[in-house]
Length: 123
Image (cartoon, rainbow, N blue to C red):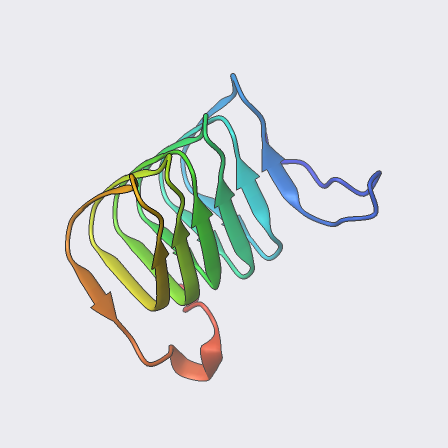
């Protein structure tokens, strides 16, 4: 399950490898996924999907860096980075986009000016 990591002095959440969550995660702080999430993810900070990370569901965040696999749509109000090891199957909406060579993107990309106030929309 997600945890608050204050031991390193950094405040963020982490879903470690060999861990699976089924359901939606909502986080007000940065989060790193190295395990599997079967459900949506909403984050008011930065989302990092590690090389072993897998997300089946939509991601909404301010910033995101994907190194693993994502099957779902991604809405990022600022910067989305697709690293060379990433595989994304879904549509993207982002203000800025960086795609490294060998990254895989199967979907359409829409560049947005910004979301209201630069923040992630809340339900």
